[in-house]
Image (cartoon, rainbow over all chains, first blue to last red; front, side):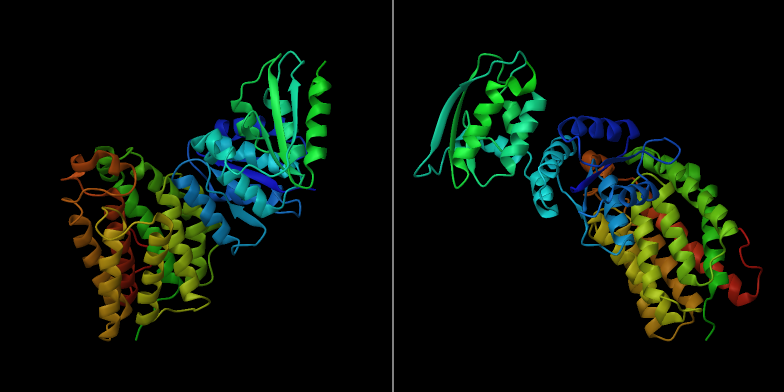
Length: 224
Length: 222
């Protein structure tokens, strides 16, 4: 079981595209598109959103992501219609990045509030860059230098796998200066075949985390 | 005091549909000047859908009629007007509850709840050149009329007068919400389409109430 996502967009195609993209990184998460009007035109429909909320709920809660303006209002209205249930939350996040980050968090088994937070902070660390990630240097760190051997390197799918698995551990982990629990940041590395990943982890699961990264890298993320 | 019942609520919605259809082109032109030009089309589609649903499932109370309108507008209008008007009707439905007839106080309370819903959903304030600029004077006028002991139809008449004046008063404003805000001072001299449609709809409420008071057939188009 995991938290589900509902994607609300003015465009049916856009909502379906976001679902398609996020699903690649979160195969076990229920993702429901609620885009466009009932007649297929551009706009948002309360009934479509209510229907999506109903069909998405698997018991662990639903996070709603939206595109612009009135999509936010329609999503808010839907939650108001439902009497603001504890099990449905609207994330204030960029649609694509937020949906991917939320999907990966949901895939790793994160709770509703954590999935919302993953969406809402999807862009934050990018703005601050590695400077912040490198700031609080932990007392004891487990480190490793690992060379990517699979042809595609650390592309979207392995980034999602790594971030998802690391997300379930109690660890602070940096890979080449970015947060290893963030799929978005791992993807910004653009690390191709032959790139060396400098891994540094601290916290209770530090050793497990570094071992996990080593295993995945040495297996070529199962792509060899 | 002649309370307003379900017949009035249904007549209001039907009359609104007729008025919105009649002013469709005017609303489109207002919106084309400072927005994306779809307001008249969207509102017409929403109210046309309301007519169909009133026939399918006739509401039993004014609150049920408002809820039907809320659900339909939020599902069929498409643009920002859908959730804004939808929330207005939804909050009005909550305000009147299960009441079979609405007295002046309840009419004023329903309008205030509707306006509060628009403000909560759209985050606009008075003077932002939005629907709120029609609704807030209407709510204030309705409250004053109700407090002075006016009949429900007179409360709605006062609200409609104030909404029309409020809509006209958006002409010189710079928009601070919605798509018109991108135009900055180029929005000056144009009436806000949402304020204009709000005034039309509140006038329809007043006219439906006058018809009910004078015994004219409910639901008659203007």
